[in-house]
Amino acid sequence: MRVVVGLSGGVDSSVAAHLLMEAGHEVIGMYMRNWSDDRFTLNNECPWVEDANDAMAVAEHLGIPFQTIDLSDAYKSRIVDYMFSEYASGRTPNPDVLCNREIKFDLFLQAAISLGAEAVATGHYCQKGWDDASQQHRLLAGADRNKDQSYFLCQISQEQLSKALFPIGHLQKSEVRGIADEIGLPTAKKKDSQGLCFVGKISLPEFLQQQLTVKRGEVIEIASDWMGYDSPRTQYEEESRPFHYLPSDGKIIGHHDGAHFFTVGQRKGLNIGGKPEPLFVIATNTETNTIYVGMGETHRGLNRKSLFVTESEMHWIRPDWKMQTGEQKEFMVRIRYRQPLQKAVAHQHAEGMFFEFEQFQKGITPGQFIAFYSNDEVIGSGVISG
Image (cartoon, rainbow, N blue to C red; front, side):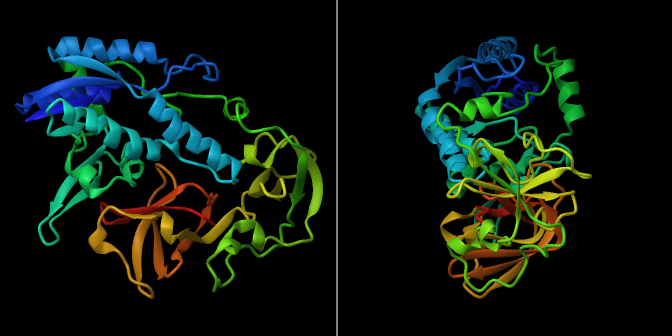
């Protein structure tokens, strides 16, 4: 069938295109231009011109048609503006997860379909399966557990998954490099990109200051003997946000330039010394412009056993798994990329999902995604609210 491959200029998508050709598909290479403003990138990481040239060189080497599509306006409105909005409200977004849902498997997919393609392919380290009983597509972890990227796809839908191919998901990274080297791909030795999807490594404070203003606020230290957030909760509304559970007798130990510039778990940028152990941000409140900190990695404000996702921000890749109010299920979950899967029990309430972990979790951060699994399959995800 005709397949459009998202050629990023990296080795993974390059090998994905080669494998599709080997399987007999008609392959078209397409580079997504989503960002070109390099004012805030560090060390010229991920310049789009170089990536586009590498993608074109790969297409020429493979002998496939190639074109570039400019989605920069949509990327700004759907991803970058979302980032600013989340930081302004005191949450820490994960733009790479949204990029897959909103750009790669939405606008890019639409562009591919307009070219007569039946599917799009990417260089993600994940796999796809089929469940006969429910007649549903399955999103599965990549065979290379060190490179598994299923977490980044935890927001895609059944419709999107039905038209997605992941040609390298069954391979180890070393095997992908070996194939690229064997067939002489120009990207065989290229280093993996890091940083924000399509933008690269950025100076986040400078980037955020484009729209978020600097304003002086208090840094409040919460004592180390505080017992933490994990008291029983009967109401799951706005009061579930972390700062509502912080004690009111904290000590002012410094000032900052804006609570929206900080995130839970952060230790750099506080500029407060004289402590026997490092200080970590354990909560932020953008309404009062306050940062709460705790001393040491074992502080209970930094280590929690529960989190909540509001019903409106729950997403089921497998709709047939959706839980009813009062139901509970055990899942393996992760709250960040590359985190080892953690055991948790999910409790479905009318207001949303409450997750209770078997082990303490460090740095549970509002705005980030929790992805939940059954064995190797991603069942769904949600935005952490508190």
